Length: 162
Image (cartoon, rainbow, N blue to C red; front, side):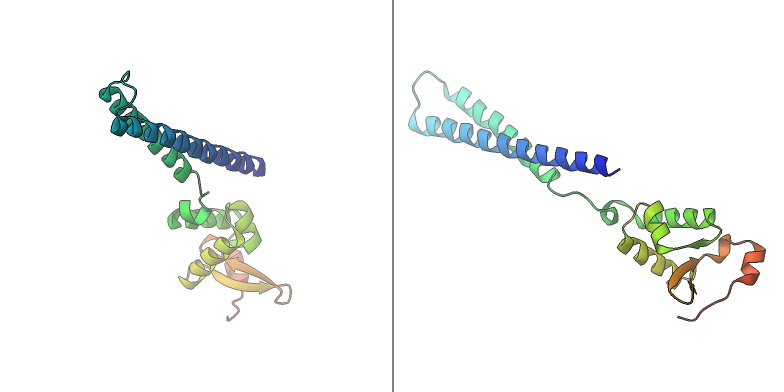
């Protein structure tokens, strides 16, 4: 997956460079055509052609600016993944894990950063969907989703005050 992200970032850089090149080259031709229009030109090129060149290269410059702007920033998971989708990923993982997940599991399996995973798990715990429990003498946190536990597991679960 990292190779795909590196390739995507490389493509974005390439498209930004192409965008800058198109804009600069078009700017040169626009300035030249306007200078010929204002200065009378060499008499061989009609004003209509010069105006057409200004319009054409203006469009190319706009395309270059768009290429640069559209590829200057890589969206983060927080930008592109709606809250409902992040929540559903976590709930599906919790269901597959018998109602118990750790922060690292959520980050690894739900394609979210550790910070995003922690924020989402805390939000689910605050809303009452999950409970925070301590294991291994209080050194490890486990998020318990009671709705996905077996009746046996529900009976043996213990709650730890926050």
